[in-house]
Length: 346
Ligand code: KG4
Ligand code: ZN
Image 1 (cartoon, rainbow, N blue to C red):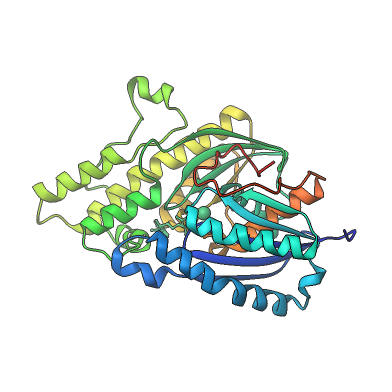
Image 2: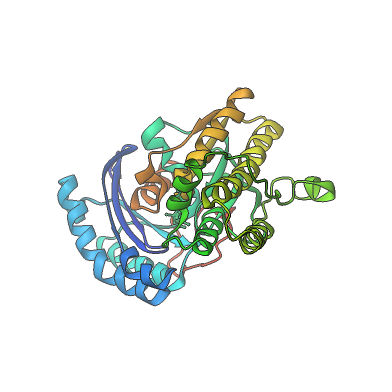
């Protein structure tokens, strides 16, 4: 392997096919193709369509990544691919492609946890990650709080959602209001347009009584979803912007209060946010405000790095190679429910 190895990252957990190249902790190129437009009319991701789209997009994405970076496939020193969590069929396309390339090139292959990649990618934007930090990963599939120590060596899962993920709840409630899929961004704009954002108050999940301590870093959004649904039935004339604002406030109050509490409790001075829900405007403002009061820095990568992409996989791959960790065993496969404390397949 070169002293400054060239790492190829491959992401295929859901609807995005991502290919990226990293050298010396610098992102050379990051190519993403998405099959989202093929899922929109179904109101959700259709796994079979996503898998086929990965098959069609992978080689063109690889070719353009190599061309943009001005390197040859034979220059690649190590490969990282997403091993989970995600859709089995989609993961299988990325993993088998990565295995074929690794065998042909004779280079090591790392099957990595794409959720940890959502945090690792911030090193391209804001420099090296601190030794200890809290990770808040919020997307259509995840809402988790992680304590990261000495990445890529230790990840402790502090908590997560007991039911819906934050983005998923936004998509479902947006659908109730007749908004197109994915409804998260539409709901965000609608909430921000409310004349009186405090006109309605919805409950916060796991925030009172025994639940508050027992589930101190966990989230629950399904009761909120039911409360909004009931409110819309009982108040057919309700101002949808005010309903969206109250709904958004409930979710973001929980996410930000628990993220800051986790940081304070564990003595971390930094919170890194990742996942598509990081686009949410209220999450950003409320987290900045609450973390700021505690002297905690919030790092959020630019939006193109928050949604699934190859660079997050290459970032984690680069850290694993740099740490001298052994590659994944040859027989690893996709793990749709990969535990968040498992940084890569070892
Ligand atoms: O990470 P991502 O691109 O895909 C995965 O789920 O893995 O996240 C997409 C999710 C969707 O649920 C989408 O509605 C939500 O993030 N989302 C938002 C916003 N932008 C995207 N939710 C609320 N506010 C937003 N601005
Ligand atoms: Zn993701």
